[in-house]
Length: 254
Image (cartoon, rainbow, N blue to C red; front, side):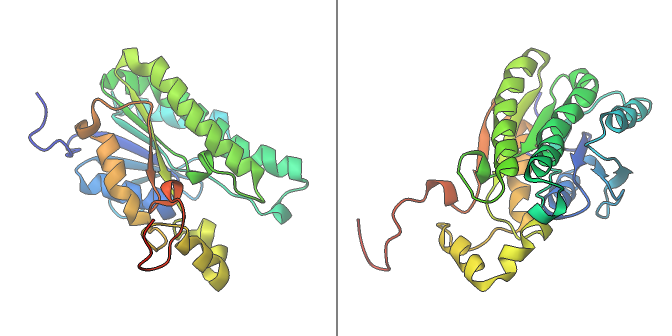
């Protein structure tokens, strides 16, 4: 029997990667507010208040497996896995453009898959688990200057669909949450630049940048029984960026 509140996460265990800041921290806080017990993974080993922090480098497969083996000693199931960890490297931070590409794929795509594989036994035991992969508008749009990030997010969208098919028999749903431009540490440079800020603001239908808290409602929906018949989908929370067509001036009608 379903809960009287289909959005309630009471009694469920959730893991959120990238929980130390930005979108991951907001989602972790939101799931906890909906009643879940939330464990937050991050390299720094920090998490918001009300979230249990665990230090984990998702680009290290051995470390990821070790963390889940330890969790399995204390928990007999996992209800929700949110893969929000991700990097976007400036070109100056890598030895070469190819190295930058490889580092980005290692964390933003391969690291997510490694996390899912390590979490799978606990998700299967739940019988009704939900995996939420945080992609981006980059998964369906071409953006300049960072091909590794665009490729990783497009690949993650494809991985979401593939695993939705593979895990359906286990009762595990796999969906993606795709943010638009959100004010975080990752986007701080463009947010602070007046011209870049305005360019991105005008590209939305709602006329503003996103805030990390804007992702909470969609995350709760995908994690809860409210979306129990939804899998293999990518939900865009982007202020209308991906559907905006011709920009018209005030008062002009098509």
